[in-house]
Image (tube, rainbow, N blue to C red):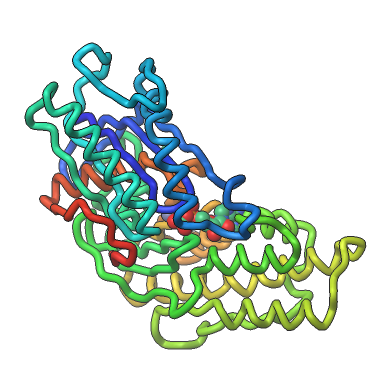
Length: 362
Ligand code: KG4
Ligand code: ZN
């Protein structure tokens, strides 16, 4: 089945066209086209994502990206699909309905409904389905090259421990199959990606700060400053990042790194990154042992972090389990993962309301 997917939950406007086939235990995906338009430059002056600006940008970007996906000709002010538009048959439209910024989510939902209305005449069975953004991240490991054409391997991966780490979420869950999972824990306050962004801002770097922290940390000493790793010793699978952020703030208040004092900045970034990642790795390891898991799955924007991937890779070798993370381009927000989660929702007969739900859980 051919799926058109739309993602607008935060500051990326993304549309993808994906061919999906196979069953709920052995799905297969082929990306036909995927376009992501980042709004980083629009939000940067504000130090973070502004919901109504994001909405405005999504509304502007969606028709243009749609046009590029299908090589159509029409002006942005006159978005219209008619029988002359050369659009190949589509079987389903998948759109993110939550969690995320509600004004941004509505932009995608409204556009998806408009496209559905327009394309219905070509295919009276055209489905439109609401997708959970977090399921998109969770399922994104299915796009990993190593799994392609190896469906026989899929069922040997479970139970798996999945770590979803992004700008909005820090979630650990146990996945028993592609259709069944249980959340083990999540952050009590800030998300890990959010703490990377905030520490980068304290060091004078623009949003989003994760890649900057990684870059600075590569030249710093991770043992230079003993920042705390909050909740590392608690028996649960929850996380907390606001205390770590505050420790960095106090340290900087007392030490004032200047642009000339690059070493101090590098050491702060490296020590912060070390403290932040240590908890993620420790709790993932504990969950693997407790549930006798066979695989560690990593996803979300922070999964792009090279040090986290390295640490989990080393840990998985020690534990003798698989470690799977999606290719770099599918870690941060994209619409391909929404097509994947949309297909899985169809197979699992999960129907979600086509309405924005900013705080939807997994
Ligand atoms: O999944 P995502 O694109 O959006 C959300 O759903 O939140 O994640 C964005 C987050 C940002 O906080 C960004 O700083 C972080 O992912 N990020 C990184 C790296 N690349 C992106 N954090 C640490 N290291 C990176 N290399
Ligand atoms: Zn995301």
